[in-house]
Amino acid sequence: KRYGTMKKVSMLAIAKISNTSEIEEMRKVFESSDIDNDGKLSFFEFKDAMMKFNYTEKELQNMFTMLDIDGDNTIEYSEFIAATLQMGTRLSEDRIFESFRLFDTDNSGKISKKELKRVLGKDYSNDLVSRMIKEMDQDGDGKISYEEFLGTIRKENRKKTSQAFEKAPSYRFVFS
Image (tube, rainbow, N blue to C red; front, top):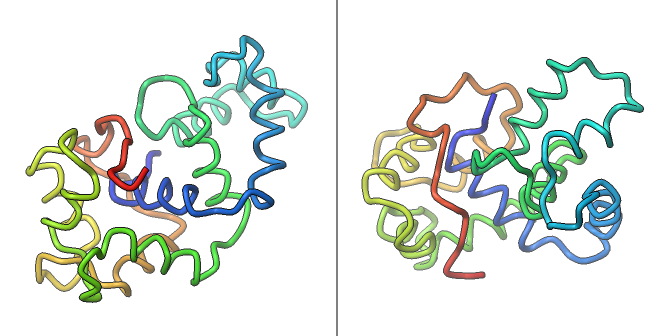
């Protein structure tokens, strides 16, 4: 099961604003698992690192799919950090709010399609950005409030997202 695209992008933003001490241990785990030192984990590298935990092949494949945020069949360092932060710790509301503010560029308290498109850049089509807004927009106003954003980030067991969100363009941000 994959996260919805907006949640994926939000988690990458949260990983981006995490401080060094929070991610140092995760970096060590990633580097020790990256056998060929290409900056990505293949399924085989991931499986090798996780074997000691006695997961089934199916469980490993499901975890790998969830960690592979951009759907390229590898786990990049930023994907690993983003997913590990989500799975390993309860995100503080302060950290989630910082992430929300990265997208709410006009400080209106809501993320508009225009703001989201500006932050994500040209790799994201208007149609995809509209679907991302719709994914979190609970009240139907065409924008994402902080409450809607927080609710989506915190929600642990989401319904399976549609095929439209299974693959997204590479995650490069204007604020990188």
